Length: 233
Ligand code: URA
Image 1: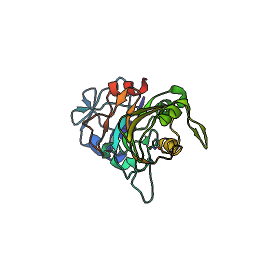
Image 2 (image 1 turned 60 degrees about the vertical axis):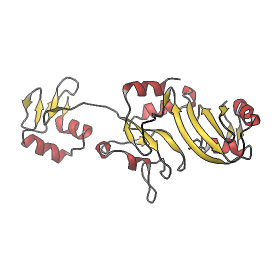
Image 3 (image 1 turned 45 degrees about the horizontal axis):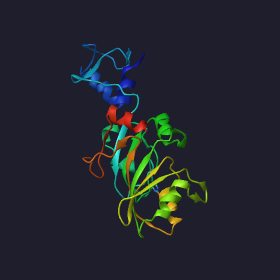
Image 4 (image 1 turned 30 degrees about the horizontal axis):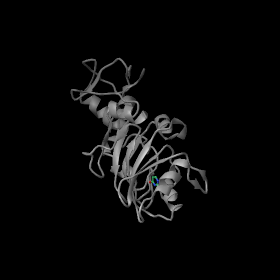
């Protein structure tokens, strides 16, 4: 059993003061009955809480997808630069959100933002082998040496990379599949072949692909099905 005001504050944009007001205005019901005090205890798993006739759905965690544009850093706050959290709809701002994994400031595409540390750890841990898929454009033609090297494990200054897949999709373009996420990994891997990455976009994680209809800069909640697909390989 938890205090109803605490539950509402955790699940909505309302503050404790707002909840008091809502209760005083008789806008909060528990199992169909108006409540008169904002500190009553309820069972959030069994009791039905409604505010202005709308049922409160209790979510322990939230999972958002962002189509990250260039120019945003993968951090929760920064004194000068815009962060990916600046693109999260305000209705989620009461949660302790963070990006699950980093994309460079100039990398675009699929980014998961959540308040679930365990989930984040699971999808990022190299031990779980969750695939991350990227579209990449480099400044020189792609070649078979790169394909072989990626497969055998490129050696970077912080050690050998796990086997990765490079599919050549055009003269200067390719698709890379990684199961780990080191600092500037793809840029450094191509750097070993004297190539510079011009464009980098993450397009998939696990069995999930960046939806075509999610515009650059847009952020929305993931469906159960999408969430399941992210965790699968
Ligand atoms: N590899 C990079 O070099 N940068 C990214 O943002 C992601 C993978």
